[in-house]
Length: 443
Length: 136
Image (tube, rainbow over all chains, first blue to last red; front, side, top):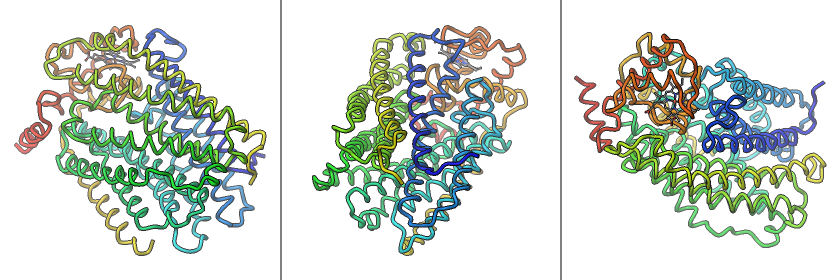
């Protein structure tokens, strides 16, 4: 019978596999930009792109789930003999993910941007998350005393995932799908909230792991932390509208989004104030790899927030919307922030020894990623500005001429993309190796 | 957290009201016709959005299609020729005449909801103009 003893471990391995496959397919699809004929029959771009998106999305979700399962099994102190439900949850998550990937691979599309697969597959996705909500709450409600912020973040993340994911299927109802303006606005609304929901899962994980690393229980319970939690929640619920500046919907939606987006300046200021990581050297060395990844994530939060705030200003957004600047923002967030935090957390859970000496490949992967990512990011921003100039009213040059002009820079996109891919695969393999050979922590 | 209960309640209630506003008053526009509705299904089944955007949402290999049927120098026949022939980068989906017609109808419908899209220098101007049009 299907039986997993250690849910966190199993999901961590699944997640790392998705990461490796995801960046590989991502690199392939970036090559298809450069060489239009490449794999045109085996894996055309309109398949490779959603395949890449779903593989990396599954990496983020599975890794976040793995970390929360590690929390449940190691830190809630609850009796955990009955694993049937957890096993069923992992099975449902895995089977649904595979079915989605198969349908995308054979080009069986029915849905919308980001959820292109046949609509019925949305049902098992929703069930997976509802079941996880139940499992998570069953353990968390037993925790005594006021909840630390990470429990709130995880709960918020799971619930808002369920709500936003359901909302992204509203187009099935004619009231929504039959009206282009409403349709696209609701689509942006749900996608914005979905990204916010997994950010909640990931930031919750970061708070939790950092608390375990530095032993300071105050941070996750302080007023200022809760202030930023609520600010994050407000952004999750309201700032999606900055994607709709160009949609002829009501200005109330756009003005709200603009004002809310600007509150991110506070988050930015807070990061700058906390810039120096206050960890003793002994603690730092004991968790060195995790601290590295967290530090990298901190820097990327900083850079990406600046970009986010800039493109939330309507006058700037007017030129940058629908250009690669949006892609730069997505890459900075998913690789620079989400992936760095998740790798930090997985290193914490999976590694007994965190010295760079004992983790040469992981350290090498870390360095390659953080060497390549700034180049990759800058190149995409450059391409975005280039496209924005092309989209200027009055510019009549043809689309393909603009694309051809960009080719030399596209090459750098591919080169840095290759190093990025290699670095992420090396880091993932190194962690996978520890997870499989069991040279890390045990439960 | 008990002391934060009210904060949470206020935020969630506002979100609910805001959703209601978005679903009803905030997003008016012309309803889709039958041909365009079929075009929309084809657009999704062929995953055109992997390479094209509508209102900024979608992939970046090809141009945004929101306004293609109305853009000076482009238009319905221009769009039709791309869809029927494909290009080096864009696959020829070997669609029937009717299917192509429905796709064009869909693009035309989307464009008609965005009549001032990308033509006015100021977003806020555009917004005011549109709300005037809608109110009339």
